[in-house]
Length: 63
Image (cartoon, rainbow, N blue to C red; front, side):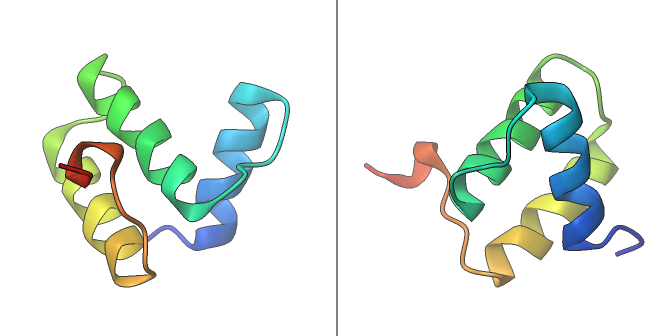
């Protein structure tokens, strides 16, 4: 993956004007960016798998 966790958090902070409260919030943020066509499927998959390996759980996985 070409982006670091620092870069992912910086993008979140720039967009939301606050830091993410958890790694799960970070994952949900990037899921929304994908849903709104702000990132493509390849970028989203890389981010998803990277954050998932770091322990992130999507709100959609809480079934």
